Length: 143
Image (tube, rainbow, N blue to C red; front, side):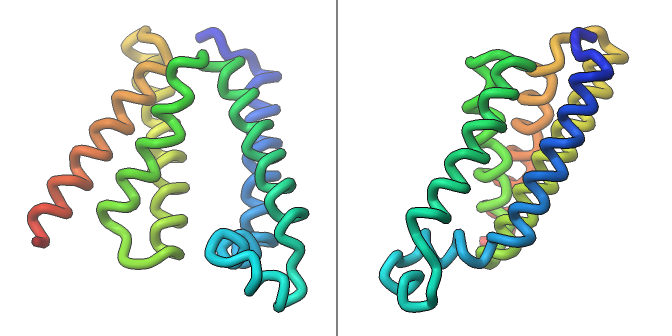
């Protein structure tokens, strides 16, 4: 594996920061995303919220590019969200499922890439694609 113990430590630190951000700012991000005027009326600064979210996203993307390469970053951003959209019934479920799918996809992908000696980024994306396919099948079976 090309990921060092220091990379794993940095990953854990970034993970904790992202979870802390979501626990603190999730409601504010939703309100700003829905309507900036409503956010202002509730005392939420849309610009500060958007800047904080953008900076956090930029850090995660920059570190992801370093670890897995630029071509796979888009897949890692899109597939968990798309899979979550297929099975969620509301915005809170959507967010929760996207985080869980991304986490499990990353963990399972890393484990599989270790045992099968494959590229970690590509294996993670393949696992996420399987999750998306399963969620799509689940969505179609409910209709």
